[in-house]
Image (cartoon, rainbow, N blue to C red; front, side, top):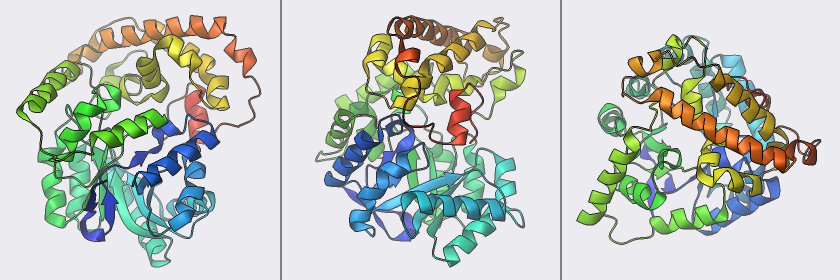
Length: 388
């Protein structure tokens, strides 16, 4: 495993980390085994605050706390709220400190709230003074100019943002500012939510001026394969590999939502959470990866199995309310065929619902022993908008 200096923190961080957005779908013991294997493979960056992912991490990081770099996140924007969230995470991780605490920053309005007097930035400064966190971070997947403005203040130690074969805007918008301020760079969405194969996406990303990439991993096979992609010498791509990258860039471009701060949702007459459906929804992303039958057979955690049918039923009802007015297609700055993509999602989820009902999932897993992981995730599962 290659290690890189995480900007001015001076920490040596593994080139590959683990994002928690998909491992959270596993049973807790399976997640612990995955994090343990990641540690054995040399991975020392864990990105937390997703379902039970912090619970899965804690026995692993306890083995050598100074070796692991653990990140967590909040959208809380006041001094008091952010200190409360830090304390909650410390208790859940059963640790004395969190290495990087990120403020979710999707646009300039959120940045201004974080940096306002009495805002969350002041709370993180106090948490750092108390030794509860070690570095202050920003994390966002929408307007990267907001992240760049935050980094330019010189107050941000680490920033987390999307960069992949398709979504390359950060190379011009954000990366130069990070380099100027020696800010650590952690990459989310490295395989473009599974739209680009890891063997293509990860080596390309390793050749960019970043420090650590944190793909979502949900199986031991995924973990081993991702690490193998980066075990290469030299790291530079061959001409044939560059051509393969370009082929996948073109193939995935018309299916990749850039999460541009709800531009399409503003005009949607039915109020659909379009960017969520196209890009964020981990259930849908797993369905696309596994197919309907594979989804039914997959060893998801009990809470996933208990709630999958009602989640997809709600989503299909939302999508069937679409009157195909075409406004989402018209306003998309990246010219995505939004209506066609939503239609494809609807049909795939309807097919899955038939499989789930035949397998009698809702009865088989009713009263599953593990509760929903967090209130925000519970809202998402029940069909509400995700509370970031």
